[in-house]
Length: 322
Image 1 (cartoon, helix red, strand yellow):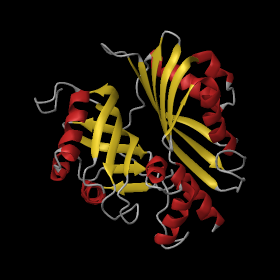
Image 2 (cartoon, rainbow, N blue to C red):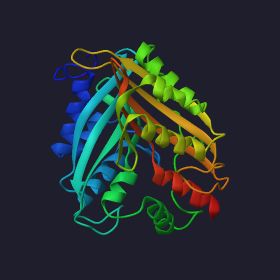
Image 3 (cartoon, rainbow, N blue to C red):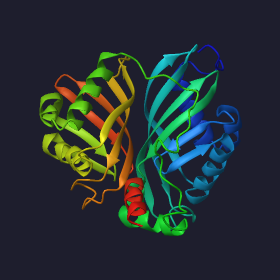
Image 4 (cartoon, one colour):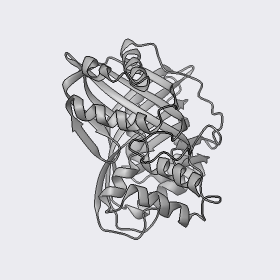
């Protein structure tokens, strides 16, 4: 790991190690070292610039969930020391809502959700990031409705004109990371599967997915096999049938003792002009940031983990509606 501390054996070791140091060991101040001073951090909820805002946000989250844990499930990565690395890190995060904050007064309820972070790293430092956590799943586990939570957020933040605007290319900034991933065949395969679905060819699921596929989707949604997987993807695409689909970053990997894997960051941009998982069409301008991780086996795609943020999508719809 040229340019990195000798304590890290490879990029996954670095990503898992600093995550533990920051969250599990409560080394919040180490973000002054591990994150660049002007790092752009993009979430479906908006964009944050600089490690000081990241430090303050981390502190606020730990105050709300003091027993918060982040356990790394996988790190799917690409790049090199000269041009920088990109780590797509899937985590299972859990905690108990014993403090007040972003999610309201403490409920005492426990949550378990997934998050995926795409982090660009070079010279022992993260300098560009994209992050989604399953906010809808967390809200549901705390006893609230994601759609109503989005309405309440707008009201708390001062109304449609004044509230924090969800992330889109309109409020994005150009960060230092310029890579697009790698040309591994497994990344290309997942890219082709998602592209065919977004072109409304849902026969690809029965053609390319293992019949016993295990899928994890937003809202703490777990399904198995073809029919329920089709319903999840159709529900999303049906809401935005004319939206433009784009693969933003694509990685494929084969590593010892692991199934072939792939990680895609993708987007949908367009209007809410169809009936689907977001109800009656409103014509709202919508941007969806999405992540998909996949593992392949002898009978096709056997595990799929997809995250986008229904809360931020509802928020865009309600902002449009006033």
